[in-house]
Amino acid sequence: MSLAIRAAQPGDLPAITAIYAHHVLTGTASFETEPPDEREMRERFEAICDRGFPYVVAERDGRVAGYAYASLYRGRVAYRYTLEDSIYVDPACARAGVGRALLARLIADCEVSGARQLIAVIGGSDNVPSIRLHAEQGFETVGILRAAGWKHGRWIDSVLMQRALGPGSTSPP
Image (cartoon, rainbow, N blue to C red):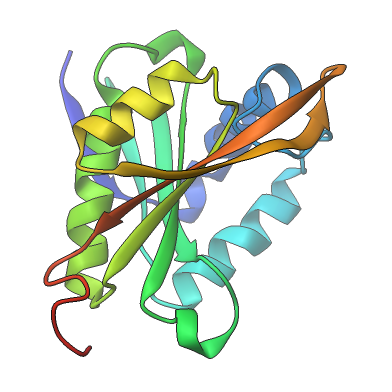
């Protein structure tokens, strides 16, 4: 079974929507509680792509196995060189290297874009797979927002991890 990472296309949106809906309904990676429909996901996809940020999918045997994208960490102009990553994997493909391949490609694409910092906001300090994945790709934990969200009948932390891109903060952009 080969895995290919490629730019996401509008035709991928039904699979992307289904993968995200699963994570919204069952996990803590997203703090949304109601999954958005395909129209909303299309609007989000177009907004990210229109800004020139990377949006990629992992394809295995002709089907979308996961997706990842980067967007501005915050909207204020001083944050323009800092992006936030988002990675979601089809549960049938978990622990098969899909997230690792997506994150590696996303980091490379973010570096090409001229961004200097990449932030991961991980839902749940108990989300060991995501924390480990990011650490393996050079992210460091820079903070934990305790009980930042309420979902599935419990308080959930947000773990903040950060990684420099390219020269990072060693020179002006």
